[in-house]
Length: 87
Image (cartoon, rainbow, N blue to C red; front, top):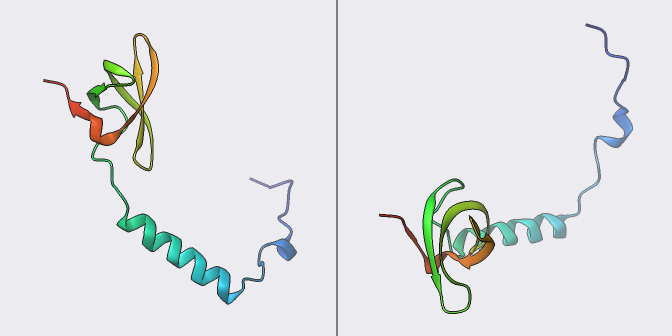
């Protein structure tokens, strides 16, 4: 199969400063020490929060310690510490 498009090799290597490498390594270190969500996308969970109320649903997405919970009533966002697995 012949490709009609050839990649421009001039844009492949971008100069990187030492300080940007240090900053990205520091950010990865802090992210690894942060809170981790034990639930995966697709898990059936129950969210119980005084502000959002109690909802049963499926984990739609995760970002940090926040979990998007898809329910029959709509989409709610919970902290992962307010969730538990369904019985």
